[in-house]
Image 1 (cartoon, one colour):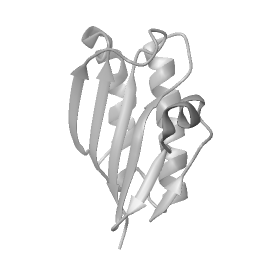
Image 2 (image 1 turned 180 degrees about the horizontal axis):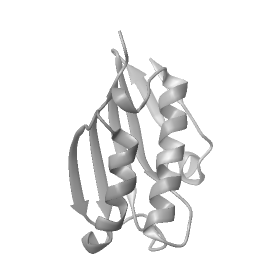
Image 3 (image 1 turned 30 degrees about the horizontal axis):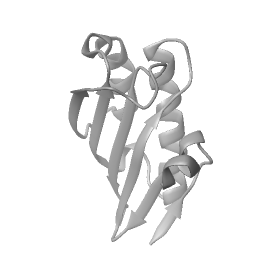
Image 4 (image 1 turned 90 degrees about the vertical axis):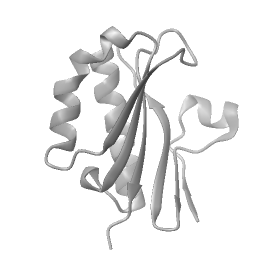
Length: 118
């Protein structure tokens, strides 16, 4: 098992790491990004997730599952073009959940699971 830490603000406070690689799978924790808008936060969260995927030996085409969590579901649609461009011809199974996040300044949290390439 391999644990990947990115030094995020909540990793030490809550007691988790950004990603865990186990049994051929990459499990990336719910990730928030910085920015003033949901679109900026979405892009930044994807940047952080991509870094963890690369450290694990995977990339976007290896993602099999993604969960989007937003406090306001009406803010999801502006993110759709970014998400479609990110996953391109390899879209994962996906779920969007409307829920509260750890801090009201966050507009979106993204969690992914990927299968390491053979």
